[in-house]
Structures are given as C-alpha cells and as structure tokens.
Image (cartoon, rainbow, N blue to C red):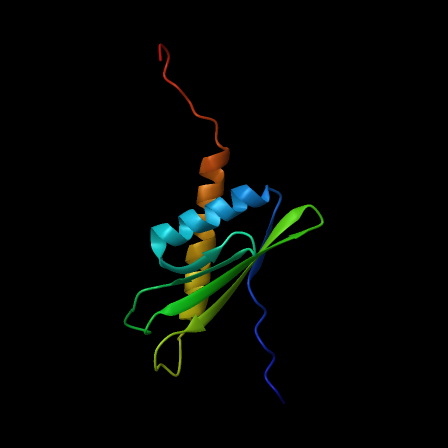
Length: 117
C-alpha cells in the first residue's frame, strides 16, 4: 500500500492581504533567515538553523486570496544531506504560524495610551 502524501499545512485568515503578508514577513524575520520574498506573487522562502535533529529546514510559504480570505500554505523541506527530519518540518511550521498569528494580533490591537499622554 502506497503512503499517503502529507497534507500541506494551511491556515485561513479573514484579514487583508497586506496585513497577512506583513505578519508573515515579520514572523520569518524574527525566527528565521529569509532567502526570498515576493509580495506580488505571494511567495516567501526562509530557512531555520541547524539543530541536534536536523541540518535545518527550508520553509516555502504561499499566500492565496480566495473567497475574500487569505490562505497561507506552508511547505517544509529538508536541507542538507539528512535522510530523516524527525518531525522538524512540523515544528518549524508550528513555530512560524504561532509567531505569524502573534504578529497579526499585535497589529490589530489598539494602541493604549496612559492617561495624560
């Protein structure tokens, strides 16, 4: 029996394309090293550092606008001569989406000023 290919991690956001793109770039910049970004085509590629489990991962992210929402699709790939990633791809995707969603929340929170400012 053939193995089923893993589904690409995808999340859907009811925010503007510009806001989601900015959150993706900020998340990638904060936690990873960006290799390529193209807002027009909605593609972003970045790499993670090496760990005890892997030579690092390359994560390609695509933003697609569909039905008034932004779909963010992440595709992790192994770097280097490693045969197994030991789940590292899933961890990198999880870290990226956690940071991206934190960036989206921070951008949508109102600025609170102290009384008298």
